[in-house]
Amino acid sequence: MSNRPGHDGSTRDRAWLNSRGLGSTRVRTIAFGASIAVHLVGILMYTAVSAILAPDAFNLPINTDAPSDQGTPLIRLIDILPEDLDRPEDPEELAEIEAGQADARRPEIQGIRLGELLPPPNNAAERLRPNLVDARLWAAPPPEFFELTIEQREELLLSERIVAWYDSVAIARAAEDRLTDWTFTDSNGGRWGVADGKIYLGDIALPLPLNFGTPVGHRDIEARRVWEFEEIERQSQRYLIEQSWKERAAAIRARRDRERAAARGDTTGIR
Image (cartoon, rainbow, N blue to C red):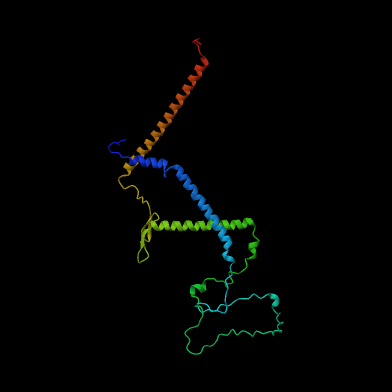
């Protein structure tokens, strides 16, 4: 049988070998099973041989007289049973040793002293601050404190909290006043500038806002302006009152019309 152009018989032979020869599924399965069997037999033989040899049971002979390779002598330890030991003799009575008195005096060092091994003295602030030896810290409370009732103690605590709150408010107010204080003091002690709603001119303080009154010759003009303003206010109030009366009258007429229509009923006769 002739081959077609571009193809040879090697491809078909390789496919036939894979399906029928060494590359078939049957051959691979048999080889895998044989491998498992060989491994199991090897493991069992190793276990049996290691149990027979038992290398831990061998006792190596040790020659204690022969020196080692490193020149260190080997010593063989022999176990001694407790019953082979003799009981030691009872100790003699020990004499009591009396302790001498301790000498707490500082030893005198001859020669030049570079300084005493003492802590530095307290400074002025530490001497004024109460410490652990201050009697004020260990003083007993006054007996009047235990005579107070619970209500009186609560009032004292409440008053202390109120005082602390007032102090905090005063501190905040002082800080706010410092932000709006635009004054300075001269060499004579006079205060100049604006602060807390006043103008300081040396020893004089003028309140703000300043009102100097109506200037001369303008009294009639100011009076006319005041009259016009008051008249406008009166007319606006009158308009509001009249508008309210009109709205109330319209509401009353509408209510009466509804009541009359309900009283007459339906006169058409149509159901």
